[in-house]
Length: 146
Image (cartoon, rainbow, N blue to C red; front, top):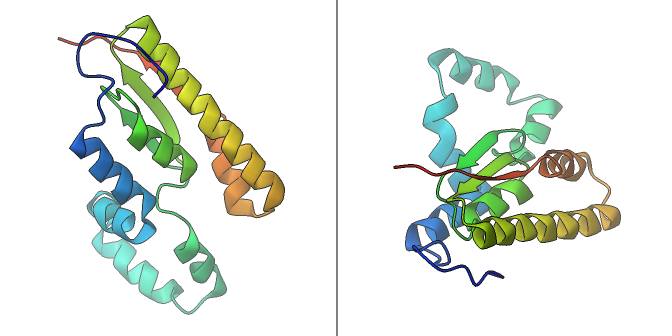
């Protein structure tokens, strides 16, 4: 955390943020967490039909956040946002319009994006390229509520 912003608790890493970041980072746990959002009776039959195909093996290796949209309200340090970004999600991360806090979040997003670019240069795979493409669209925005 690079900010010396004061006021509120935005510079604290909350246990809930750490927990959701850990869930996002683990593809198996993340898929289980998100499954109620994407599961339908018809998709179960469709998945069973595809299990024997090569494409389904490729899809099974995809991180469940790859290509999904994630918005974090009251992000503070933004740890869940940056993990979701690294997993290939399209991320919008928001917090109160305290200039140092927004600057800190933007710097964290850029540092994570830079790290992803360096990793993608060394590993040429389509999932990494897609994740990087989505990460380049990350948005950090002030959002005052209440």
